[in-house]
Image (cartoon, rainbow, N blue to C red; front, side, top):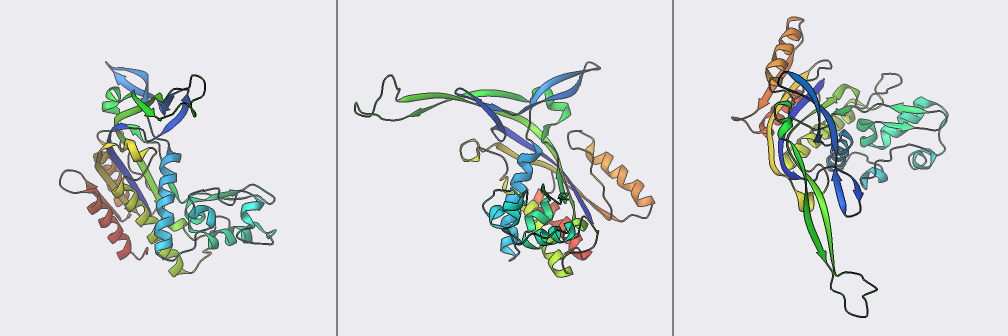
Length: 315
């Protein structure tokens, strides 16, 4: 089974993805973006959130959900440090001595950590072993029709430290001025989850775990997505720049084989996704498509998708 989710969310005055600091100025991530104006294409630079940022947040939620179901999570991932089994130092924490057979290396890692099972890893030693992530996530980009209204603006802040004559050195100031570049946009991003890849070898395409363990890991992966979207706990600087807004729309497709919803950066993404699914239906493919907009909240649509998957025996 394959789950694809298109999300539109409004974020006003957010600092969810910062990329560098130049002096006392912190910059928001911006990307070149094609938009159409007066019948012509032009490139503009707009605020964005990287797929890496969203993936990191998802895996943090996956850790919590996996531990809640008493599933194995390695020490690095428990701390939110997703090094994965990238070399011998990290792999030896899971299996020692390290096997020479790539299949046995993959099996040891998958058994030891849900995050590396779902999120993939690259063991860059000899023999190299690569496992693709079972989930995929796009950049969060402004909706096309409103991209020209997306903006990044610096906000002035000041820190104050009281210093007496004994602690003050030279021309050190008691007040520090700094700027944080904030973004405002209606964003859209896509999240995909291949449930059939969880607990299954990327080398042999055969199950590594028993059926009950696989179902439990699928449940953790689905709950992590639910929690990430419901809590809006993704991105940086949430402690003082929690974005004002929230999820506006969610479109969810559950199919028997890989299918990706039309990107929510387009205004007609729901209609186009429905038309594409109708074509699949003509080939005998069964699916669920649910949308959360004005009359349904995102949690209801996500639960509907999870209930459908449970009925199908996915978990």
